[in-house]
Amino acid sequence: MLMVAPLGMVLDRGAKTLVPRQEPPVSSLRAVLGQAMRHRGYRLLTLGFFTCGFQLAFIATHLPGYLSLCHMPLGLGATALALIGLFNMVGSWACGWLGGRFRQHYVLGWLYLIRSATIGAFFLLPKSALTVVLFAAVMGLTWLGTVPLTSGLVAKVFGTRHLGTLFGVCFLSHQIGSFLGAWLGGVVFDLTGSYSLLWQATVASGLIAALLHFPIDDTALHTPALQAEPANA
Image (tube, rainbow, N blue to C red; front, side):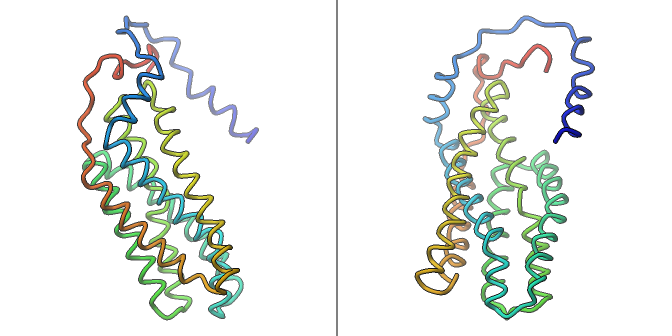
């Protein structure tokens, strides 16, 4: 972290050369949050992001244990998590690229459908090193691609001035889902001796998330106060 911190100063090198410009009045944070909470698309987006956290935390926490129950080699769980991280680099970039060329909520909807289909197929198919590797690769491609798409959609609708706060509310929903995915996986396993109910829940929640995202209205709110940018943007 100490090695990364100085890079922030490099990002700010050109800010002092920009000429400040006159900005329209800025709405209060309370007003912006109130408008967002009344926006049906923002509510759907926030609910959908819950699913992302639920799915990813369950898999990241319990996949190695699940594979050991399936009598797979102990190292395969670590390999799967490593492959998820590797393919996540490609998937996050690709989803951001797609979000710049297609409507973000449609890309999000298809991402959740692909993720749910992958989880369902992995749960139903016989377990082998090949199916685990393929599952990890596809999951990595869809792992955190939701982040550039969700933040981009919030910025498109509400502008960037309060993007940190509005995306933070969505991310709170994501983190609640993460808590439940990790915690319920352990609770259900303790009660039933199986992860089957949670695998089914991750599939169902992904399908619901896809249905929530497709009808989102991504029309930008043409309120000057919401669209105003900082002078050094």
